[in-house]
Amino acid sequence: MAPVRSRLLYVTDLAYPARGRRYGDEDIRLTSRLREDFDLALCHPRDAAALMDAFDAVVVRNSGPVLEYREAYDDFRARALARGTPVYNPLTGRADMAGKQYLLDLSAAGRPVIPTVDRLEDLCRLPASDRYVVKPKLGADSIGLRTVPAGELPGLADGSVLVQPHIDFAYEVSFYFVDHDIQYALYAPDPERRWELRPYEPSREDLEFARSFVEWNTLAHGVQRVDACRAPSGELLLVELEDLNPYLSLDAVDDTRRDAFVAALKSSLRRFLAATG
Image (cartoon, rainbow, N blue to C red; front, side, top):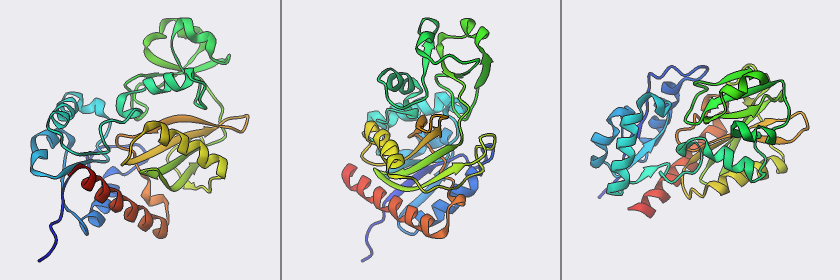
């Protein structure tokens, strides 16, 4: 008798027009591999709440910015928590899953993040700069992000946005984790071309930096992407910790790393299902 296969509801927006990324391609290819081990169905994020009861777990992947379907996501989240539905990544994430408040908290705690405040009276905590980056606390995918001169800040820093000094960084680099294990790293050599990524070989210090934020987030299971920039001083600074639906850029890694990632994801899902079943 064949073993019973777990049923997964895979949440994705295959048609979301992500700049520089192909959400649909990544999820089509990834689900083709997951079907080797699980019974799986895809659905749009607006349909997840209505369909999830027929499955053993919900896997949230390239579902697009929650801002595009805020009411539907809040309904899904509330129902899943009330019913104890296993959701991967778990809904207890402390980073982007919960908004951008964590950047304020980590900055105030002196962690290596881009200095961040949200109120005019706290601007003195930021390094002096001719330009500042302003973005919504509930933003995603650079929606609402602006770079403004210092003179415009008094009318903007009202608690609803994040304010950061504009940093002329050398490059951005992303570290991709399954559970607490690093899978690969990619970087954008040209700061103006965020999604033109190349393989990156992290140093021991780089890995310690990235892993410290994954450990801070306390998710026992899940996929996380740690985004950082290389500051002019040479240190890495956290840009964001994506723990809701991080794009994986699997098309930018070789077959060996891609296969290893898929194997790690399958193992993580099996452990997650065993722990929540």
